[in-house]
Length: 337
Image 1 (cartoon, rainbow, N blue to C red):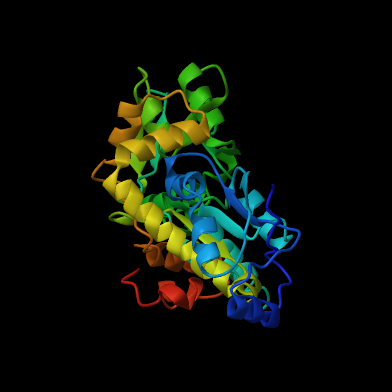
Image 2 (cartoon, rainbow, N blue to C red):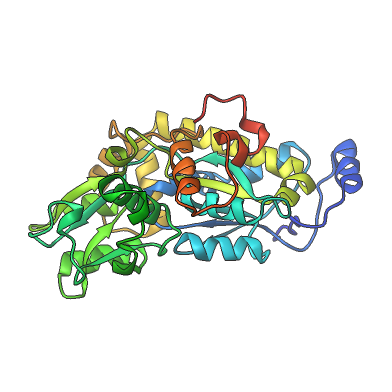
């Protein structure tokens, strides 16, 4: 028989406390709604989904939760869904997190839950004339998941500012086009569209680079001076406050998923292949998961320099003093940055 669903909104602390005291599940009408995007970047969520880890840890806390997984494209769409109440936990870049943290400061108070890991993002092109940012002309089009908001857009802005000055940080904004990573990859490989450059993500960037004529211009690790956690999870303050047991179960599920990937990367590759429907082979996927530049740590790393940059150029109005300002205090004891 299908389980009834735990509501992620409007469950009172009294009801939750009573349910825990009697060890009875909490039932309601709505699922826990989690938004993810495309790529191995979201592997922690794929493993948690495949292994029913959120349900497992919620049940241990006396909560019966059904999880609904939504796939969106681009940080702007994810942020709109979160602020409209269409989702409860958002998976997107640290750029969109900083945008929505700034936008909701003092009201909905959106903050980060955890990182999804450290992954390099490559700026790649099929245009042989482009070797540096200075070579990009007004005719070139750069695909990003969300124009001006996605973490790839923010990396591009930082690279441009470093090359030409902070007052020029948005000089390539007019070149960018919003396109999901799978579609942008196909466009780059085919060479038959206006898209000739793509600020990509794993596994898509490696897939594209296997094709003749596609090469890398720069990457996020070079731009940020080292590994960075580009993709994170975040939620509203109200969701966290109203659903402490589900929130705690979610963090526990992420930790078990991290351990699972570390101990059995090949099975994690199978999970990604199965849930994403990708045609990429297992050896290729496993090689990405075990790449020395890739980590599935929950601890956010090297995000604060990007936050400082966005404040300096006026992209966000509220000045963060540390990474802890835009992440919930559950993880403040971690050695993040």
